[in-house]
Image 1 (tube, rainbow, N blue to C red):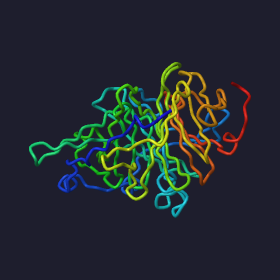
Image 2 (image 1 turned 60 degrees about the horizontal axis):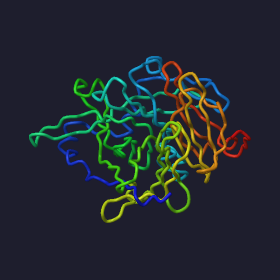
Image 3 (image 1 turned 90 degrees about the vertical axis):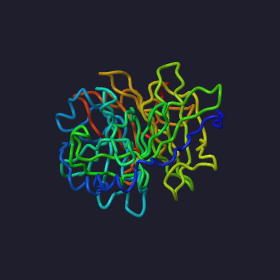
Image 4 (image 1 turned 30 degrees about the vertical axis):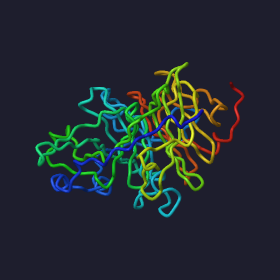
Length: 354
């Protein structure tokens, strides 16, 4: 399908992010969070044929009905194969996004996980906030109220899916430590929004919903891969945007428009995540609570369905090339895991099911 009628339009970086703001709120970056992790996960056997190992959240996070995990990205997305080996300062870092079902006042958050193969992984939650300046000298922090169904960590930046609003962008160096937790819903660390991309389309084109996202590193150009959740008969589109490796933001023209490389419409029902690994697409789809999820492999218009090989509540997916693994996560209370999948098996295995 012709993609020229869709675009993401960049806004100016938030004017509220002044140096005075960062003097009021101590900027510590990702390094500061990794030195102050306060929660403990456990290694877990994850149900389903596809998972090979994974992690369970701390009990209160596993069972809460106020927050639901959605998106996933790793330090391998951020830095690729070189020079760090896909690590952040020697750490294999996984990030997961959550949205609040309590209401927009609670917004969305990111979990920073220091993954360990031999030791229980530790993590901490960071609240996503949008600082706004009023009366010139004062700042207020508002939670970023998006579904956060997909996230991509690319260099200094974290992209967060904002559904029909477009995409939010954060700079991880801007993570701040706050003294008064009352103003940040009890969170010690918050990440202020840097800028955002507004979703636009030509007249007559259906609005694109950015439900989930991932990163594709291949060839000379990296791409942000996005797609939308929809039930049978819905749009269910997949789209790719080129990334500027110098700015670590989306490539844009002189009008500030990011124009997609390609758009595939429609695809699969109930898609929850999509990633491209070595030229092959891997897509997760859900089948309702208590029902196992599906893994679809192939290319747009020609996918093979691996029925029921994922745990219930399948969500976003990413690719970790150093381990030759796909990583995903689940959302339902009491059945929440972050887990690895053997990419070589599922990206090449054929399946005769329609």
